[in-house]
Amino acid sequence: MAAATIAAATTLVSCDKTPDISGSWTCAPQHINNVSGAFSSSSIDVLNIANSPDGNKSGTIVISSMISAQQTVSGTPDLIEPYQETVAATASISGTWAFHPDEDDDVDVILDYSTLKVNVDPTGVAFSQNYITGREQPQIDSLTASAVSRWQQSLYESLRPYYSRYVRLDDISVRDNIMRTEVNDTDLTFTREAK
Image (cartoon, rainbow, N blue to C red; front, side):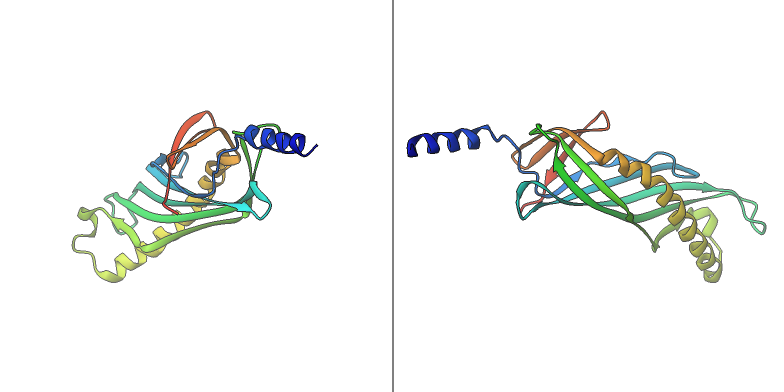
């Protein structure tokens, strides 16, 4: 009887092929679509995945992004010449994850969009050199404040659909701190930071 119980337990353990996806995972830069006015925008995403106290089948997730974007802006009333803005920003969103029922390599993610935050640091806003040459600092400060507000709204609106593609991670494989998965029909590779 005891031998049969041990054999059954061994079979259950050996059949569990669920990969350990806990940790902090970083992906190569990805394009962000439909950022209002931007001709180029990209994000380096970090998935911070934690297991629940019950095991490695579910848990919490925080997606953090480091964003870079560029935009050409038409001239203002006092300055006819157009100029270019660049911005560095960060964003994050939280949620929960769980392996899909009857699957050991597909994960469902539920994101809480009320936790979506976008931070545009004024020191991360820059203007094309030909535009700022000769400008006085108060004028530059005014442009920076306007740019921060505009980028904040534009990125917030674009990141909602951008993050929504993470609601399903398909065909996950983990080996040597490399996680490969399919996200919204796109193959992505993440590198886990050392624990």
